[in-house]
Every structure is written in C-alpha cells, then in structure tokens.
Image 1: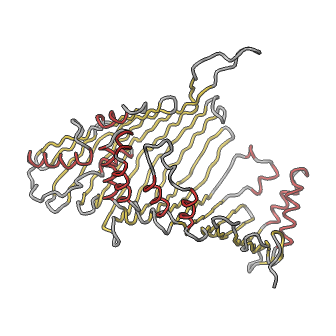
Image 2 (image 1 turned 45 degrees about the horizontal axis):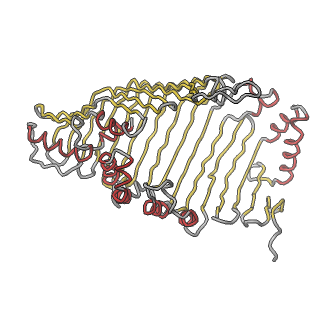
Length: 504
C-alpha cells in the first residue's frame, strides 16, 4: 500500500515545459518517461508512457526494481502493475486519474507472509511547484489483507541421558490475521507552507471494518481467536511543512542504490539526502473516531460505542513534541471475567491525554547522520551515547503532562491530571490533582467482596479519604506535590513520603 502511494507521489517532479500541450505526443511521452526514470531508475520495463489522445498513459511495473532488492536477500515483495492517466493542464499542473486494482505480496521466509488487494479510484491535480498533489479525492473498495506469522519450534530433546538429536529448526504458524474494509474515502488539499515545505489537510472515512486474529497452540498466548468489527470510522489529518522535495529525493536515492553494498559504498551521498530531507515535516496531527467497536474473544464480548484518538508529532526539530489522547465511551466488558461484587463499578468511560515536550530531536539525529558507518559491524559505534543523550535533553528536563482525564462509571467519577519534569540524570519531580465523587459506591462494592480480596483496597481507600479535602462541588480532592526531586511528597499540604522537607 505504501509503495503504491510512493509511486504516485513521483508524478511530474521535474521542470515540465508548458509546451507539452494537448494533444499528447510521442516526444512528450519520451520526456515524461525521462522524468519518472529520474526517480524510478532506468531499468527497462519499469516506466512506460504512451500518448493517447489528450492524455498520457503512465504504466509502472515495479517487478524489475523489486527483483533487484530480492536478489540481495530472501525477502520477496511483489506489487502488481500500476496505471495512471495524466493530462497536461499547461500551467505547471497535471490532472491525474486512476481506476485499478492494487495487489501485493510480501514474504520473509520463516517469519511472515502477506497478500493484499484493493480497488482504487482517484482523481487529483499534481502541482509541480509543491511538488505534490494540490488536491486529490480517492475511493478504495474491497480492501483485504491476509497475514500469516511463523514461530520457530525447538526440536524435542532425546531420551534421558542421550544428546538431543541434530535437526533443522522447524517453523509453525503462530497467527493468522485477516483484515478488510468495505469502502474508504479520502479528500486531500495541499498548499505551500509559509515557512517552507507543503501543508496538507486530509479528511478520511471508512465503512465496514473487519478483522479476525487467530493464534495457534504454538503461540506464546496459546490458541485463541478474536473477531473485531466496526461499522466504520472517520477523522482528519494535517501535515504542516512537509519536505516533499527532500523525501522524494531520498526515495530516488534508494531506488538508485538497490543493494546493501551500493548503499554502504555511497553512504556519504545518503548523508546528504537524509540531511536535505530534515526535518521531514514541522507538525503532524491525526484524529479518529471509531464507532460501535465490538471484539468477540474467548473471554466474551467487549464493546464500546465510540473510541476517539488524537496523535500529534513534531518533525525532527529542536523543539520536539508528542501528544496522544484516547477516549473510550460506552465501554462494556464481559461479566464472566469480572467478579460479581465488582460489576456495579466497572468503568463506562475512560480517557487519558498525554503530552511530552521540551526535547531535542534535531541534534541527536544530526549526530547519527554524521556519525553512522554502514561498512562497520556496528553502524553507529562511533556515535557517543552519552553525547547523544545530552543532545536529546538539550540541557533541560523533558516536560511530561497529563491533561485533564477521566474514569467514569455508574454513580461515580474520577478526574485526574498532572505534570512532571524529567531531567537527564536526576530523579523526576512533579505535581498532580485527583478529584472523585461517588466513592461510597466503590466502597460498598469492596465491602461486598471476599475479605481476602478487599482488605487492602479498603484500607487504601479509607486512607485516601482521610487525606482528601472538599472541592467546590462536594467532590473529594487530592493535590499532590512531589515537585522537589528527592524531596518530600505531600497531599493537600500534608507530607506523606519522600525525603525531608526543606529547612525554612
């Protein structure tokens, strides 16, 4: 799937003359073929461009390229022939359409096998100035992927007192995974970024999501089967400042160096291409809402009315940032796996919102790019791990934050948030705030539990209640202060642990 999109991304990446006016000509086809060969190499049969009326038919057959890669290892990767239709708009942009079935197979002997296919229809405008799609609308139907994973099985030892018989290692199926989507749609808009690169905005949706995972008896988990279904999901994604030029140049470099030997012997060129592609992008943000999730398992049926997620990630920059948020609503779990006394307090909603910031990605990546040696047994042996760590922390603690999050069940609610400073070489410090209402319901459930199960949780709950203070709406509140590394830990101003309090 990713290879297909990478090939599409190579469309019209060079300076194309507006003299390529309609109708399409043999000369125009030859020039267009030369541009694609800049990025896909000059191996015969990979790129074919044919003029047809007012369009050019572009056919890309990855087989010769993939054969070069496969010849260097046991890995086998096959992708079906890809066909696109290009129309020169005469203003530095191209209309691009496709209506085809994408198929692929991927094999790592004794490790995994995968086959997949999907019907793809898309229409878009490629803008040479970006370079990339200025706009694109795509529909995918009949997406199916089957993956099989293998696990080595150790031969049985010989009889007592005899050495184990010599035998080749055998491999058995560990798991089988089948995924399918009935229909998926994407809409993409892109424009030049003010500070360089390209800004992308995309919306996406899918209908009819299915997955079956089967673990065999040789799996570390034992024999199990999971059926996962959802009517669908939707969301949006933004990429700010994507360095299209650098990343496509890096892809072209790898196409021109298909073996480990060629890569190692030309590693200075690889350094240049990697450096040119940095910081890859400025920011990426993705959000998704998955509806009516159902998981049928050996333990029973798990369901959730909605699973929402948000992920954000900076590029390879000095101001590194990462965020992950997950919110589950309408959660139900099988009663069979819950003790009867705990059923009244099973959470129905759960959320957490975690952020990490104030770390440096640019400096350590630069050290790795400048210091790797692909001809050595350890390619990064020359990179000092102490200096790498110092570059990552950049002289200041990493900031970790848990934004307001929640656990909610019938008749009770627990809210929590906090922040922590994580230095490179000293203990962390931070603060947190927890509030809760309806704890009487949780206490009643614990009182109904067998004493050997409830004694310790009840004691901890009673202690927590004694340390609490009332909130504005009558909830119990705990303000936790552990901001001094190695120092005291206090709850609502009362020291409960840690080192001695500082002298006044």
